[in-house]
Length: 61
Image (cartoon, rainbow, N blue to C red; front, top):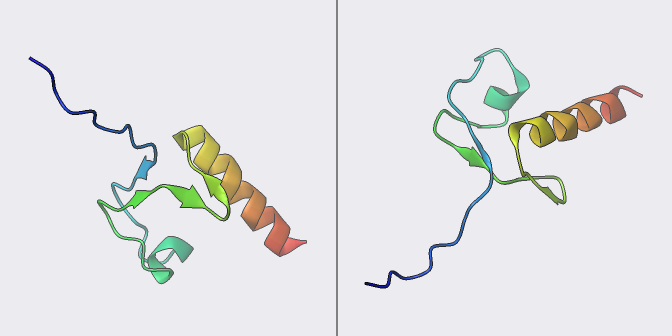
């Protein structure tokens, strides 16, 4: 039996949000899936953290 091709979706599944943090202020909620940060697609949780860190460092300096 053949099955239709299902594309693999990469992203970061949000399980919880700090209500006093910037993600909450931006409207990110539990069960959201973050697939892109800026112009770059998210490929793993480590990758997402690196992208978030780059954004935070860039906004400070």
